[in-house]
Length: 135
Image (tube, rainbow, N blue to C red; front, side, top):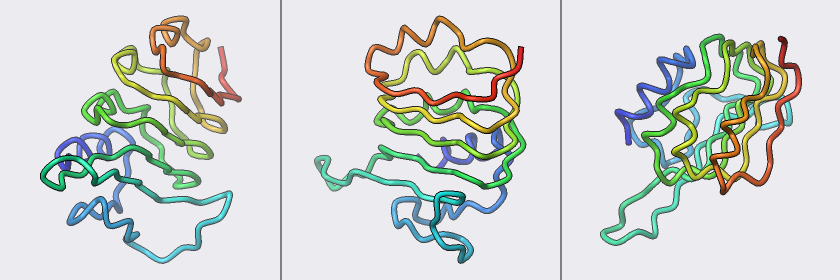
């Protein structure tokens, strides 16, 4: 899981992630959780052997200026992603079609191109918030 998070951090250009215990929800710097800022991973640790898996990722208002991370596919239990209010560029990676995402927030970024039709392959996706796409 940590290797996957490192790959995701590289793609997002996120420099301040606490990799020592990603499921601890301890932020690497103290900023209050507000609607404009959120730096949270939510894990489900009820798997056999007390194994934890990330099920939600909120990286809102982080000033991230990378790209939408294809490496999200390395977190197979991920259901919710909120990358809103950043400076992410590019388009939605095709690799995400193999995820089990249920909720995806990409609004207020610098994404380009149309919302791809292949998102329909993600049959679990129930909510998509993706304002501010440019063509």
